[in-house]
Length: 335
Image 1 (cartoon, rainbow, N blue to C red):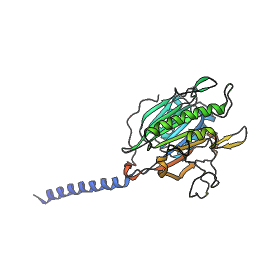
Image 2: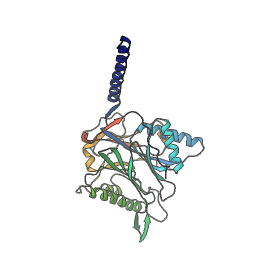
Image 3: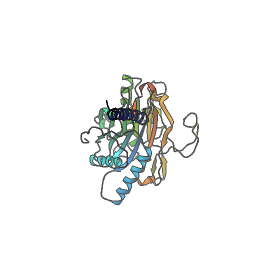
Image 4: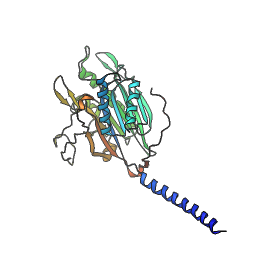
């Protein structure tokens, strides 16, 4: 074999070895174990696409807020039409927030819909729209319904979300808004009981606009009793304004800013939006990740502020996650 042939052969082998080493190093840098996930919820205050400067400003501020949230699973209430959801998804995608998986649910009231945007696959999706309750000897259907979905974070780890929007505090002509909200909360609690009675270790997140105080009967109903093993816990997101975090995030033990809604008519600030979680997620909850997202001029977007919370994933159930943006398989058109 001539010297030139040997040289070419060695050169080819060295190139192959170099390429192999590069790929291994590249994989090592761009792959790590997925050890946490984040969830958030945001009331968009009637997000409906229209040709106006007011909507353009509103949408830009909503996108800025969602970018600031930067959550893996986003529950949206007061979402507009199917077209409006598609529009928002596209705008977020252009800003680098690629929610490849999503579900839109038409509400029974016809205009305040629900939507879940997710970076992880959604399965076992259920639109709870036919549940009824009784008031004054009459039967009523949930106006906004409950959107249920299981989020597949890894091959071995999932959690279920229940997204809802309970009756507002605006009085109805024929029904007491407090009684309506209490009955709706009983329906929601029943969904929680069904999931946790089937699997007490189920990872469950209940989030959305619950439209009432933490101490109110609807919230106590949704949370469950302290004696029960299915009592939900409150993430209680707070504003990251520089306050030091307490060792235990318990109401009354420390003072912090947790309001999520501004009611201009009464010039009042309230906490109406919640992220609640099942006992199985207690050890996985990350208090430092539970925040009320604040952006300048937040009120341009909505009368609500978005909230988020984070959870760890047990190491045994974590799996490598690539930083590279892989193009997902096409999803059928939004329903």
